[in-house]
Image (tube, rainbow, N blue to C red; front, side):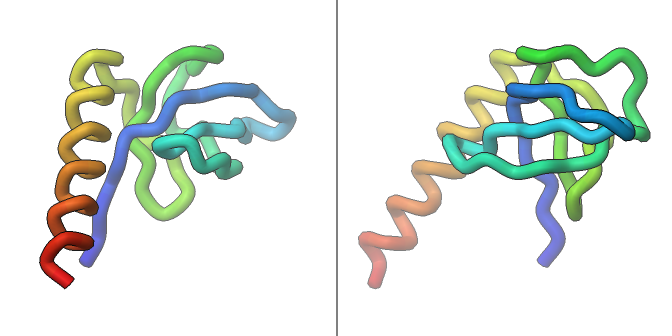
Length: 77
């Protein structure tokens, strides 16, 4: 299953790369496909690439929903 998830940009790196936080987990991704990305922006990440910028509130709601789904899956075990 392919899943694109929101992430917060926490550091811009050389060569159009950035460090992001995916629900508290750090990851380095490419931001080459999205112009003007800044620290604090939320982007949608798929297979290591930022695809677009996303509204911060929408990102937080999506991350909360994903966390809730994880808790439900954990409870179902």
